[in-house]
Amino acid sequence: MKKNIIRKIATLVLATSLILTATVSVAAKTAVNKGLVDIGDKSLYAKIMGNDSNVSVIFDSGYGDGIYTYSEDTTYETWSNIQSKIAKYAKTITYDRAGLGQSDKGVNRNPLSEEYIASFLNGEDMPYDESVFENGSGKTAIDRARDLHALLEAAEVDGPYLLVVHSVAMLEAVEFVKEYPGEVAGIVSVDGTSAVTMQKNIEFFRTYAPDAEDLFLGQFQENDGTLSEIIQSSQQVMNAGDVLRDIPFTILHPSDSGSGPEYQQMSDEVMRDWLTWSDYSKLIFVPDTSHYIMKDQPQYVVNAIKNMLKEINKGCK
Image (cartoon, rainbow, N blue to C red; front, side, top):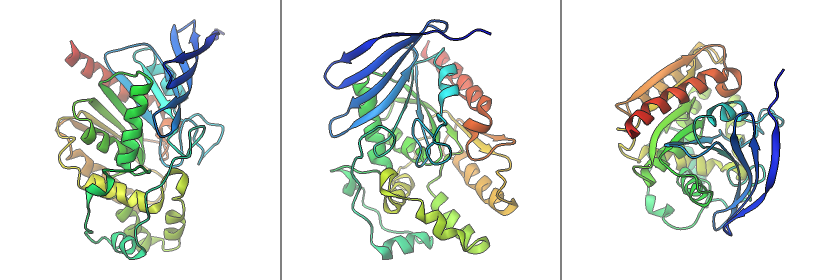
């Protein structure tokens, strides 16, 4: 049985902002760099694989997860299998958002009032002022998009970018497209969170599982974004405008997540609404998988990325 031979090259200092350990897979001839990247106000830990390509593939994990899936299995590397396969065709990067893994802790935005939070969760249309996010930093979708862009610049991962995002990272993807128009060549959403997911979940819990509401809301902590920051992220996307209209957009979604028919129907409707955001969207229902499609059915994710890369590369010629 053949094994990849990993040869340690060196510890490199690339400019003053980037300290990465470089290795190379001799069998696949794929460069691998890992380490902390200084993005100005903080450092983020990243793993870069692959060589320069027409399109760089950016992986972003769901809530509480980074390079490792901390909330489900602390030994499981969220994108490892998929990244190693895609790195044969493109430069790829996975990373820990601020507050996760080996990245710096970062800061949080000021909390919303309890009255505002309650009104939002009740499904009310709340006032929104984007100017609040022009200054400072935090862990809302806009903040995360800016952090990611700074990381890509500092690590010299060139665009255009194919964003592969899981769960709540989909909100960040929308803000990335809005903040940096022309830099995103496509999006693969792995059961991505919608702008209305928070409110739809609360509505579902109050109807079918009242005891689950507090458990659901209690998961949001300072390390990867408070409840206030998740609500603000949802509002940012609600007010993002028609930014995905011309973006190729593939949505992967469980055909039966095991949460019952009522929840499946609700989540299916949310995913179908995503289809209306882009003129180049497709929804793929994935069998025999949980929310973690990249763990349960990784080949679906690999195929979606490879198919989109083919289409994007055609347009680059």
